[in-house]
Length: 439
Image (cartoon, rainbow, N blue to C red; front, top):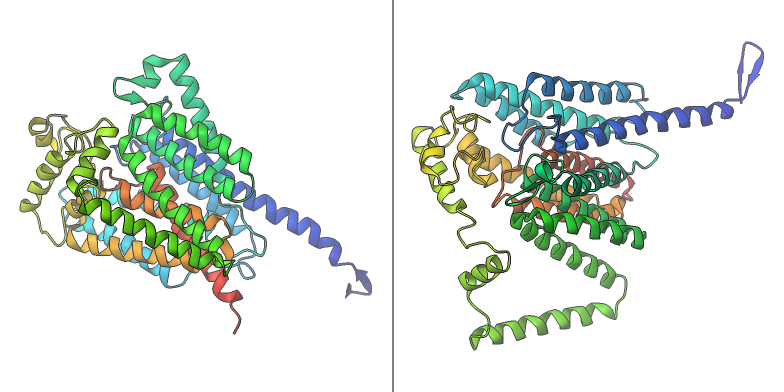
């Protein structure tokens, strides 16, 4: 109750409309983010950015600017004094990365392209900050805004492959509504991780059913890179879940430890007597199961060609962000003549691509970024609930995938958008967890 000019005002009656208005704003920001995920993949009418173009035409750049502007506008409608942005040291690490990327235009071989792509990356970061960087009293369902766009894209890809195979099916695997079969594989893998987390959260049947759909699409895409990275991510997530369950029971802890030690002892014994192959033998075996060679389908030859380029630029600074892969007529065009697969648009190794673009300084910043992200994931564990397992598995997936694909800091690629969103979201949850910690 409040008294104003002799009148009695019931302020509690205003709380429900204000809460509904706040929820509506959050919902619109989530919808804009979900639309960004959809546009990053959907390529049938050239709405999304392809695997190689790093952002594409002016029209697509305006598309991302409008999405980000909408998210920021909705952010400005909220009470930022009561619900401020979660900043802190982790955000400054991200800002340092963005600053270095923008500055690299000053020594880039194509400064205009580097600056354009740097600004596009800044736009994506701004969108993710507007959507997931605000400290809120009511929880925001981060994974909800991934469930339905990923599901729609998976179902659409399945339908396109069946009804329009001339587009949706290629000689090396399904691509569905994406521009390349590897992009469809990345989408399917993201779906597996999201829906596995949904199953962990208690919606077992729905989560497992959608996981099966995502796994079917992954198999049809024939993306061995995604399959291997997914296996590593699920293994780490499964171990983390087992450890969490064991920590709740004092009797299960020694049992779990004993089983682990026994398994290691058996594996070591089998290795000693020669029943388990050495590392190279295991690599050959795994790739044989996936129908690939241990040269990673020619990727090792491609890596050598890209690394040769470093002799022409400063190894500490690189050639500028996004300054190498700019079409067959760019400085990367010679790879189309020397590599059997022609011009491919990326080194198929995120670490080599970043070294080529940003030098050892860029690699150092990537390591700092990844360590910060991992620390924020574990710092957010108390407030993240089952969402913690998604962020942990996605971290592992990205680290492994970038050995054979380039995904780190690739402007408007779907995985890069989710990467930045995960980083921002984990920082927000970590800040909230620190504030709830008893003094």
